[in-house]
Length: 320
Image (tube, rainbow, N blue to C red; front, side, top):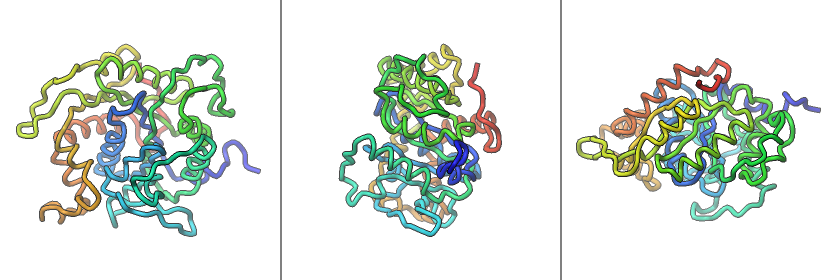
Protein backbone atom coordinates (compact mmCIF):
# COMPACT_ATOMS: atom_id res chain seq x y z
CA UNK A 1 0.00 0.00 0.00
CA UNK A 2 1.44 3.38 -1.03
CA UNK A 3 2.03 6.16 1.46
CA UNK A 4 0.96 9.77 0.76
CA UNK A 5 4.51 10.45 -0.49
CA UNK A 6 4.69 7.21 -2.50
CA UNK A 7 2.09 7.13 -5.26
CA UNK A 8 2.20 6.24 -8.96
CA UNK A 9 2.37 9.96 -9.75
CA UNK A 10 5.19 10.70 -7.30
CA UNK A 11 7.19 7.74 -8.58
CA UNK A 12 6.68 8.77 -12.20
CA UNK A 13 7.71 12.37 -11.48
CA UNK A 14 10.65 11.46 -9.26
CA UNK A 15 13.12 12.76 -11.87
CA UNK A 16 11.21 15.98 -12.58
CA UNK A 17 12.96 18.79 -10.72
CA UNK A 18 10.36 21.58 -10.98
CA UNK A 19 6.70 21.79 -12.00
CA UNK A 20 5.31 25.12 -13.24
CA UNK A 21 1.53 25.45 -13.58
CA UNK A 22 0.42 28.13 -16.07
CA UNK A 23 -2.90 29.59 -14.95
CA UNK A 24 -5.42 32.11 -16.22
CA UNK A 25 -8.70 33.31 -14.79
CA UNK A 26 -10.48 33.31 -18.16
CA UNK A 27 -10.06 31.95 -21.66
CA UNK A 28 -8.62 33.90 -24.56
CA UNK A 29 -5.77 35.63 -22.71
CA UNK A 30 -3.01 33.65 -24.44
CA UNK A 31 -2.21 31.18 -21.67
CA UNK A 32 -1.25 28.38 -24.06
CA UNK A 33 0.99 30.67 -26.10
CA UNK A 34 2.72 31.67 -22.86
CA UNK A 35 3.19 27.97 -22.02
CA UNK A 36 4.68 27.34 -25.47
CA UNK A 37 7.02 30.33 -25.24
CA UNK A 38 8.08 29.34 -21.73
CA UNK A 39 8.99 25.88 -23.02
CA UNK A 40 10.92 27.28 -25.99
CA UNK A 41 12.90 29.76 -23.89
CA UNK A 42 13.76 27.16 -21.24
CA UNK A 43 14.86 24.79 -24.00
CA UNK A 44 17.06 27.55 -25.42
CA UNK A 45 18.58 27.99 -21.95
CA UNK A 46 19.73 24.38 -22.09
CA UNK A 47 17.00 22.89 -19.90
CA UNK A 48 15.16 19.61 -20.40
CA UNK A 49 11.50 20.58 -20.62
CA UNK A 50 8.15 18.79 -20.73
CA UNK A 51 4.77 20.35 -21.54
CA UNK A 52 1.62 18.62 -20.31
CA UNK A 53 -1.53 20.04 -21.85
CA UNK A 54 -4.38 19.31 -19.43
CA UNK A 55 -6.82 21.69 -21.12
CA UNK A 56 -8.80 18.61 -22.13
CA UNK A 57 -11.62 20.36 -23.98
CA UNK A 58 -9.36 22.82 -25.84
CA UNK A 59 -5.91 21.30 -26.40
CA UNK A 60 -3.90 23.80 -28.44
CA UNK A 61 -0.27 23.16 -27.42
CA UNK A 62 0.33 20.46 -30.11
CA UNK A 63 -0.51 22.92 -32.89
CA UNK A 64 1.60 25.69 -31.35
CA UNK A 65 4.64 23.41 -31.13
CA UNK A 66 4.15 22.15 -34.70
CA UNK A 67 3.04 18.70 -33.56
CA UNK A 68 -0.46 18.48 -35.02
CA UNK A 69 -1.09 15.02 -36.41
CA UNK A 70 1.48 13.31 -34.17
CA UNK A 71 0.55 10.16 -32.29
CA UNK A 72 1.45 8.74 -28.91
CA UNK A 73 3.29 5.44 -28.67
CA UNK A 74 3.32 2.91 -25.85
CA UNK A 75 6.57 1.48 -24.52
CA UNK A 76 7.52 -0.79 -21.65
CA UNK A 77 8.12 2.40 -19.62
CA UNK A 78 4.71 3.94 -20.39
CA UNK A 79 3.40 6.48 -22.89
CA UNK A 80 6.19 8.08 -24.91
CA UNK A 81 5.75 11.86 -25.23
CA UNK A 82 6.08 13.61 -28.58
CA UNK A 83 9.29 15.62 -28.99
CA UNK A 84 9.00 19.04 -30.59
CA UNK A 85 12.76 19.29 -31.13
CA UNK A 86 13.14 15.94 -32.91
CA UNK A 87 16.22 13.89 -32.11
CA UNK A 88 17.51 16.41 -29.57
CA UNK A 89 14.70 15.16 -27.26
CA UNK A 90 14.83 18.08 -24.81
CA UNK A 91 11.29 19.40 -25.37
CA UNK A 92 8.64 16.74 -24.76
CA UNK A 93 4.89 17.24 -25.07
CA UNK A 94 1.78 15.28 -24.10
CA UNK A 95 -1.79 16.28 -24.83
CA UNK A 96 -5.21 14.74 -25.28
CA UNK A 97 -4.97 16.24 -28.76
CA UNK A 98 -2.62 13.39 -29.69
CA UNK A 99 -5.28 10.84 -28.73
CA UNK A 100 -8.15 12.15 -30.86
CA UNK A 101 -8.99 10.37 -34.12
CA UNK A 102 -9.54 13.75 -35.74
CA UNK A 103 -8.27 17.05 -34.38
CA UNK A 104 -11.76 18.51 -34.97
CA UNK A 105 -13.33 16.00 -32.54
CA UNK A 106 -14.71 17.50 -29.33
CA UNK A 107 -13.96 16.06 -25.90
CA UNK A 108 -17.29 15.70 -24.11
CA UNK A 109 -16.41 14.17 -20.75
CA UNK A 110 -17.84 14.42 -17.26
CA UNK A 111 -15.65 15.03 -14.22
CA UNK A 112 -14.73 11.39 -13.39
CA UNK A 113 -13.39 10.73 -16.88
CA UNK A 114 -11.41 14.00 -16.86
CA UNK A 115 -9.97 13.02 -13.50
CA UNK A 116 -8.95 9.59 -14.84
CA UNK A 117 -7.31 11.13 -17.92
CA UNK A 118 -5.26 13.59 -15.86
CA UNK A 119 -4.23 10.83 -13.45
CA UNK A 120 -3.10 8.73 -16.41
CA UNK A 121 -1.14 11.61 -17.93
CA UNK A 122 0.65 12.23 -14.61
CA UNK A 123 1.33 8.58 -13.77
CA UNK A 124 1.86 6.90 -17.16
CA UNK A 125 3.88 9.31 -19.34
CA UNK A 126 7.58 8.40 -19.51
CA UNK A 127 9.05 11.89 -19.19
CA UNK A 128 12.47 10.72 -18.07
CA UNK A 129 14.67 13.37 -16.46
CA UNK A 130 13.27 16.91 -16.72
CA UNK A 131 14.42 20.22 -15.33
CA UNK A 132 10.93 21.69 -15.78
CA UNK A 133 7.48 20.23 -16.40
CA UNK A 134 5.05 22.90 -17.59
CA UNK A 135 1.33 22.27 -17.04
CA UNK A 136 -0.93 24.18 -19.42
CA UNK A 137 -4.32 24.30 -17.70
CA UNK A 138 -7.84 25.44 -18.61
CA UNK A 139 -9.17 28.70 -17.14
CA UNK A 140 -9.89 28.84 -13.41
CA UNK A 141 -13.55 29.70 -13.91
CA UNK A 142 -15.00 30.17 -10.46
CA UNK A 143 -14.75 32.46 -7.45
CA UNK A 144 -13.54 30.62 -4.37
CA UNK A 145 -16.05 31.97 -1.90
CA UNK A 146 -15.31 29.65 0.99
CA UNK A 147 -11.53 29.75 1.25
CA UNK A 148 -11.71 29.30 5.01
CA UNK A 149 -13.07 25.80 4.49
CA UNK A 150 -9.94 24.73 2.63
CA UNK A 151 -7.63 23.28 5.26
CA UNK A 152 -4.48 21.32 4.40
CA UNK A 153 -5.78 21.02 0.84
CA UNK A 154 -2.64 19.48 -0.60
CA UNK A 155 -2.61 16.58 1.87
CA UNK A 156 -6.35 15.79 2.03
CA UNK A 157 -9.02 15.03 -0.58
CA UNK A 158 -10.31 18.08 -2.41
CA UNK A 159 -14.00 18.77 -1.98
CA UNK A 160 -14.26 22.42 -0.91
CA UNK A 161 -13.65 24.24 -4.20
CA UNK A 162 -17.14 24.00 -5.62
CA UNK A 163 -17.27 25.48 -9.10
CA UNK A 164 -13.57 25.35 -9.88
CA UNK A 165 -12.89 23.31 -13.02
CA UNK A 166 -12.45 19.56 -12.62
CA UNK A 167 -9.01 19.72 -14.21
CA UNK A 168 -7.59 21.94 -11.46
CA UNK A 169 -9.03 19.86 -8.65
CA UNK A 170 -7.70 16.65 -10.17
CA UNK A 171 -4.30 18.19 -10.84
CA UNK A 172 -3.81 19.47 -7.30
CA UNK A 173 -5.00 16.24 -5.71
CA UNK A 174 -2.76 13.97 -7.79
CA UNK A 175 0.26 16.27 -7.43
CA UNK A 176 -0.05 16.60 -3.65
CA UNK A 177 2.97 14.32 -2.98
CA UNK A 178 5.23 16.62 -5.09
CA UNK A 179 3.74 19.92 -3.90
CA UNK A 180 7.16 21.12 -2.69
CA UNK A 181 8.34 21.21 -6.32
CA UNK A 182 5.33 23.11 -7.66
CA UNK A 183 4.85 26.77 -8.45
CA UNK A 184 2.73 28.77 -10.88
CA UNK A 185 2.57 31.68 -13.32
CA UNK A 186 -0.60 33.73 -13.78
CA UNK A 187 -1.44 35.13 -17.22
CA UNK A 188 -3.79 38.06 -17.76
CA UNK A 189 -4.51 40.81 -20.24
CA UNK A 190 -4.63 44.48 -19.17
CA UNK A 191 -8.42 44.90 -19.44
CA UNK A 192 -10.46 45.23 -16.24
CA UNK A 193 -12.61 42.15 -16.94
CA UNK A 194 -9.54 39.94 -17.40
CA UNK A 195 -7.91 41.37 -14.28
CA UNK A 196 -11.00 40.59 -12.22
CA UNK A 197 -10.78 36.96 -13.35
CA UNK A 198 -7.04 36.93 -12.69
CA UNK A 199 -7.83 37.91 -9.10
CA UNK A 200 -9.98 34.77 -8.80
CA UNK A 201 -7.07 32.78 -10.17
CA UNK A 202 -4.80 34.26 -7.52
CA UNK A 203 -7.39 33.36 -4.89
CA UNK A 204 -7.18 29.75 -6.11
CA UNK A 205 -3.40 29.64 -5.70
CA UNK A 206 -3.65 31.01 -2.17
CA UNK A 207 -6.40 28.57 -1.24
CA UNK A 208 -4.27 25.59 -2.30
CA UNK A 209 -0.93 27.04 -1.10
CA UNK A 210 0.51 27.05 -4.61
CA UNK A 211 3.42 29.54 -4.85
CA UNK A 212 3.17 32.14 -7.61
CA UNK A 213 6.41 32.89 -9.46
CA UNK A 214 4.93 35.95 -11.07
CA UNK A 215 2.32 37.52 -13.32
CA UNK A 216 2.52 38.14 -17.08
CA UNK A 217 0.47 40.81 -18.82
CA UNK A 218 -0.25 39.42 -22.28
CA UNK A 219 -1.65 41.27 -25.32
CA UNK A 220 -0.36 44.53 -23.91
CA UNK A 221 -0.13 46.73 -26.99
CA UNK A 222 0.60 45.84 -30.61
CA UNK A 223 4.05 45.14 -32.07
CA UNK A 224 4.47 46.56 -35.58
CA UNK A 225 5.65 43.72 -37.87
CA UNK A 226 7.81 46.17 -39.83
CA UNK A 227 9.72 48.11 -37.18
CA UNK A 228 8.83 46.34 -33.94
CA UNK A 229 7.50 49.50 -32.30
CA UNK A 230 4.83 48.73 -29.70
CA UNK A 231 1.60 50.78 -29.76
CA UNK A 232 -0.92 50.63 -26.91
CA UNK A 233 -4.08 49.88 -28.88
CA UNK A 234 -5.88 48.63 -25.78
CA UNK A 235 -5.36 49.55 -22.15
CA UNK A 236 -2.00 48.74 -20.61
CA UNK A 237 -0.40 48.51 -17.21
CA UNK A 238 -3.26 46.71 -15.47
CA UNK A 239 -1.24 43.54 -14.92
CA UNK A 240 1.70 45.44 -13.46
CA UNK A 241 -0.60 47.37 -11.14
CA UNK A 242 -2.23 44.13 -9.95
CA UNK A 243 1.17 42.55 -9.34
CA UNK A 244 2.25 45.53 -7.22
CA UNK A 245 -1.03 45.55 -5.32
CA UNK A 246 -0.95 41.82 -4.57
CA UNK A 247 2.76 41.53 -3.85
CA UNK A 248 3.55 39.42 -6.95
CA UNK A 249 6.59 39.53 -9.18
CA UNK A 250 5.76 41.22 -12.48
CA UNK A 251 7.43 39.16 -15.19
CA UNK A 252 6.70 41.59 -18.01
CA UNK A 253 4.27 42.78 -20.69
CA UNK A 254 3.90 40.97 -24.01
CA UNK A 255 2.37 42.72 -27.02
CA UNK A 256 0.19 41.28 -29.75
CA UNK A 257 2.90 40.05 -32.13
CA UNK A 258 1.72 39.07 -35.62
CA UNK A 259 4.95 37.15 -36.28
CA UNK A 260 4.34 35.04 -33.17
CA UNK A 261 0.70 34.48 -34.11
CA UNK A 262 1.73 33.28 -37.58
CA UNK A 263 4.36 30.97 -36.10
CA UNK A 264 2.27 29.36 -33.37
CA UNK A 265 -0.90 29.21 -35.46
CA UNK A 266 0.80 27.41 -38.35
CA UNK A 267 -1.25 24.51 -39.71
CA UNK A 268 0.02 20.95 -39.67
CA UNK A 269 3.10 20.58 -41.82
CA UNK A 270 3.75 24.30 -42.31
CA UNK A 271 6.59 24.25 -39.80
CA UNK A 272 8.44 22.01 -42.25
CA UNK A 273 7.95 24.33 -45.25
CA UNK A 274 10.84 26.60 -44.25
CA UNK A 275 13.49 28.64 -46.06
CA UNK A 276 16.96 27.01 -46.18
CA UNK A 277 18.37 28.99 -43.25
CA UNK A 278 15.52 27.74 -41.02
CA UNK A 279 15.30 24.15 -42.24
CA UNK A 280 19.04 23.75 -41.62
CA UNK A 281 18.56 24.62 -37.95
CA UNK A 282 18.53 21.82 -35.38
CA UNK A 283 15.17 23.08 -34.04
CA UNK A 284 13.51 25.16 -36.82
CA UNK A 285 10.56 26.30 -34.69
CA UNK A 286 12.88 27.75 -32.06
CA UNK A 287 15.06 29.30 -34.76
CA UNK A 288 12.05 31.16 -36.17
CA UNK A 289 10.78 32.10 -32.71
CA UNK A 290 14.09 33.80 -31.90
CA UNK A 291 13.39 36.34 -34.66
CA UNK A 292 10.07 37.53 -33.22
CA UNK A 293 9.58 40.62 -31.08
CA UNK A 294 7.97 38.44 -28.41
CA UNK A 295 11.15 36.36 -28.00
CA UNK A 296 13.25 39.31 -26.88
CA UNK A 297 10.68 40.28 -24.24
CA UNK A 298 9.79 36.78 -23.07
CA UNK A 299 13.38 35.55 -22.92
CA UNK A 300 14.19 38.45 -20.58
CA UNK A 301 11.33 37.33 -18.33
CA UNK A 302 12.59 33.72 -18.35
CA UNK A 303 16.13 34.85 -17.55
CA UNK A 304 14.72 36.70 -14.53
CA UNK A 305 12.66 33.63 -13.65
CA UNK A 306 15.75 31.39 -13.67
CA UNK A 307 17.45 33.82 -11.30
CA UNK A 308 14.52 33.35 -8.92
CA UNK A 309 14.13 29.58 -9.21
CA UNK A 310 16.61 26.99 -10.36
CA UNK A 311 15.48 23.38 -10.98
CA UNK A 312 17.26 22.02 -7.90
CA UNK A 313 15.89 24.64 -5.52
CA UNK A 314 12.77 24.42 -3.39
CA UNK A 315 9.63 26.25 -4.42
CA UNK A 316 10.18 29.97 -3.83
CA UNK A 317 8.28 32.09 -1.39
CA UNK A 318 5.83 34.53 -2.98
CA UNK A 319 7.30 37.95 -3.73
CA UNK A 320 6.69 40.66 -1.21
